[in-house]
Length: 323
Image (cartoon, rainbow, N blue to C red; front, side):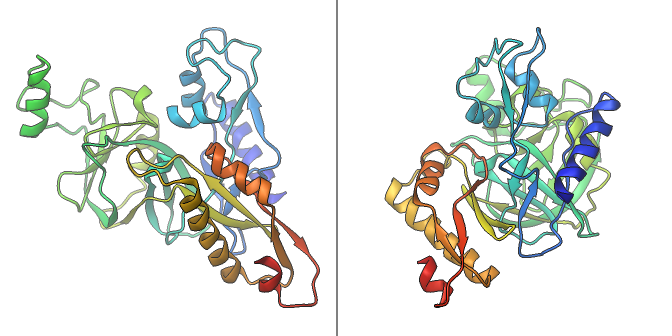
């Protein structure tokens, strides 16, 4: 209830100012819990305006293109209509990383920012590198910040554009037409940045040359919060597992292209994550995995948190009851 009220109050305040859907959530009081936002069993729906595409709705609610298409497979991307109910993801399982600095989860196409106060998390959709220009994984940090950046295209990118008949200048000046947008955060991995974009409708897709793109309004909010030296974790977690109210939830996203596992292997990896979450939480009750809910989540891969356990009272070892 506390999380629900927090999100709804923030949402009402933002809508009253003509701003976007709230993207800041309270972290759970229990550090072992990792589901934030509305209770997943209470989905949030909206409708499009007459002139909207589904991508306009996505941007209004701080969602990327892939994400809104996955959760609304029956809604037309270009002509959603004004009467069609559009599902807006409003809860998330946090990635399994330290709750400090920035986390980028590539299969989720999403960035998480954990302020130093340890009380909240903000999250935003991002674009990542194409299959032939992968965004690198690992731990790094922010090494520089720059507002109104210029862009010096690398030779490889200039060659790629030249092959298409597009000649890039040696330096693209700062301004609204700059592919880096108006703000850029340089990572400790040479050549890679988190930045804005002059093509916002590509946010939430695998379209960049390895850098991480954000909506202009999102990077504008994040830029003053980020400090040089802030840690950045870049992870590949298509399946996330977390606790809320003594239940285990899973959130499954499509695996990155070229890295898809057969269902059986994905199932085994997911069960390993569930076991890990169980031992970390160590509840007094036993938990029984609901096989159909687990199977549905692994097959749909729509990125929505789903409860896959139910609590039962037992007198025996609860680990034996779970597995």
